[in-house]
Image (tube, rainbow over all chains, first blue to last red; front, side, top):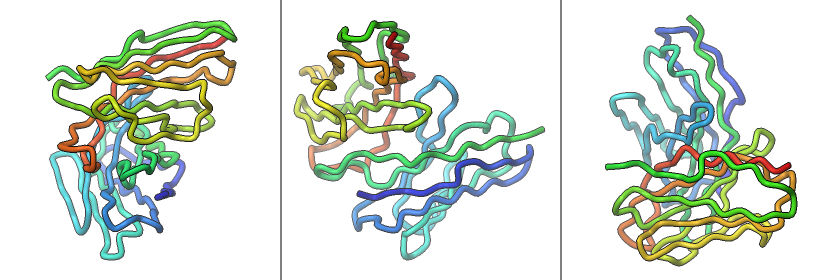
Length: 111
Length: 117
């Protein structure tokens, strides 16, 4: 089971870049790394997914080192609306493995 | 495409009763999974269905069960409700080409808020 560890909370200011790191020491060879964003009373929303090196889309970048035992979600120039909980998910239910989310990182963006 | 739809949005039940929650996945998605979210335990996986078959299951008692229909819609049932079952129940669907693939992102509904009194 790929257990993930993330910081419980982070604070930032509008316009800054925010980097959230997730540790996943026992990631399996076939596991992808996926990040989700969740606002209160809503379901998590997919942000980005990657396997190795760097992935970028219109909202975020995902950096994965060669050993793949950690990953970093990078949010450029955050705004107040980025205040949310961010979850890292490693693996996606291969075979009989459960889909296990970490405890999430609560990001608070201040004006 | 319409997103994942969960009904009802809110539900209040009494201890000992049973409840059925419904989830309609995104059109074309054959996988549906269920999660329980509480402030203390976070997001916990209940089970996943693919083409009407349960593919994997989390660590929950047998009071929690589910099923998936031929149109991919899914229901989750909790029997003999306990106070600790109060939670936000989330459903997610994903597009899997086959039962052995697993890396497609999850698409969540906004959940059913269950309160047990």
